[in-house]
Length: 323
Length: 287
Image 1 (cartoon, each protein chain N blue to C red):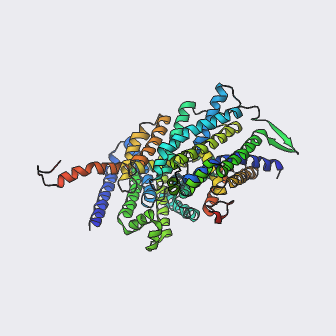
Image 2: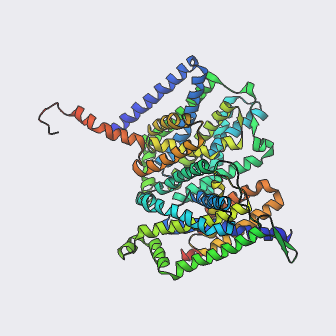
Image 3: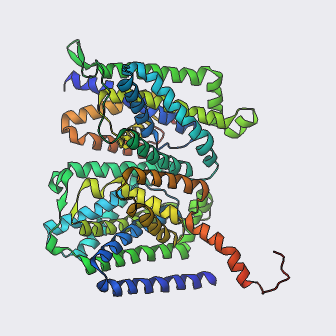
């Protein structure tokens, strides 16, 4: 069965990449470590969005709500209790999952565009709530105890572990029967339900799973920034970046968001850091162009471009072949 | 609680209804959540700012020009870009409007800078007292404008040939196009009409409060909240939805303080959307 072979290859490649990441982390310059952490956080958030939107067809504009939940959970836990930073990351994931489960009651009643608008409203409500929550610092947010949070090598290793979890979960969705049922749901919900797919259970599992991952990424963001504020971690930019990175690379695939994160971060975020107007303009235009001309993302373009090459390679080298 | 609070809420609700009316129109006909509606509202405000600033127009005189200008920008976007995406399945059109909202933000920032602006008018800060209730003139004017525009929209949709074409395209685009209705043009006209309504709301918002190029998102969500309260495709419901939202905001500000205003709005929106997607003011049987 080629599916299982692909899955084994993907799993092995992922494991190797994670081990290499953990191993090389200490040898890197601080600037590179910081860059690596940033990229891996973006990758996690984009991949979590990809699980939800690419594989399950539920387009969310609410990633920021869970980045913020994770960041504030980790920040408040370290500021007010004596638990360690690793436990705080786990707690961030757990609280994000809990909030996702509560939001699921109203949100998962919604389909299509309604779901998207609902997630956007939930995310803005979270931002408004944090801005008014004086115990958590209100609009100016809070600063984490600097002596108790990881930095440099340790932080990068944490980011590697979190991103590996996101990639692992995506690989599971990509290759498992669960993922196949999700795809059926995405493409034709009544037909899938008629064939016995548990609609609510599958939507609930992807929604909560994606939110847990985003929450853990939020904790990493809190450690990296040291300070968290509603305008930073709850900014709608997190949701936008997740959509952009996953869509540009190719939503509904395992590798797409990896490509997309790299392309968007280097091509846009980094290069246009000091040009806010231009960066908005390019991001907006890119979104329009992608949905208009390359709805399956850069990955599909590359695959299509590579197809004639591969066919040429597998054909017998005969000069009689018509061009 | 004082009557002032209730009247202020009621009147500001008119403005919200006007924002919601355009969103509701587009969703009712095109079945697309237009995520650039907030920028269309701002576009109206900035166009009026241009006319008020350079030509010395009163904002109310600038209003029809702003409506026309934003409608002229919206028409080709729908005709040549978004309608083509409607055939693609899923969320492509909505994601495209999100992209366009970013482009519009960039354009507004480049043209007008990021400093807050406001439209100056003699009635911007003025007020009067009716039966002992304090009324802000700008909100009274915008409420009246909303009622007029809601009425016009209702009449155009129900009494004119163009309105019949819009309703036909909304109900069944395939059959409508077989009967000779140019659905692509109807869609573009619908977005243009929605943009004109948005621009009108933008001009009044600009008189009532200051605005920046990034103020589109809260405006958009206000519009969606109205639509969620009102249900889709009912002009009268939109007016009631806007007033409900205005009252809620005004009461929550009076009870909990100004900081919680937005939280209350978004939460109400979220809950209304989730538990009553058909709207509070619309009978389910009609859908």
